[in-house]
Image (cartoon, rainbow, N blue to C red; front, side, top):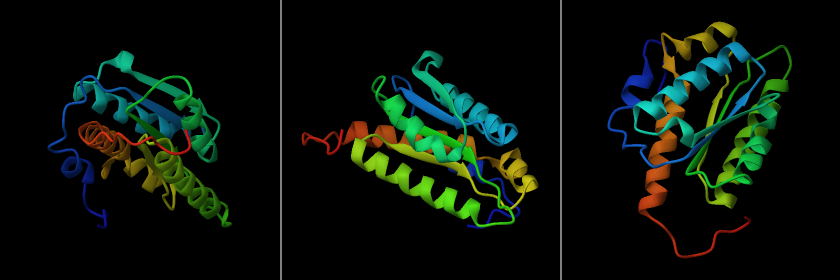
Length: 171
């Protein structure tokens, strides 16, 4: 769905279950810090508003978006989380560098979630310019950090309600 004239955060965050008793990790890329900090703030605030206790949210920073999957894996090694949210921003440049970063990170985050049996959420903006990033990190199109938090809650609850007795692969 195109977001040219919409704040999608409002629709996506309706009917979200309680986050009480859930633990979340947030991995934030330092690159494009103005954007990633706004996304992270929205994400954390939404988790708390949905009932998650602040002490049940652990945040770490990594240098850039490319390092998000490794940061998520590091967090997984410290304690058990119900979901991990990766927050980053890759703005299109003059070369294809942004495509390589975005594709690699999306693939690694998906693989990490599947292999670890822990939901790992892709909260990475891939805008064409800084204005689009600002619009999606608390501007006219909402805050994609909030949407990532809503997704994390939904996936954590889904996993909790559908516990498998089978052993997970990989970890």
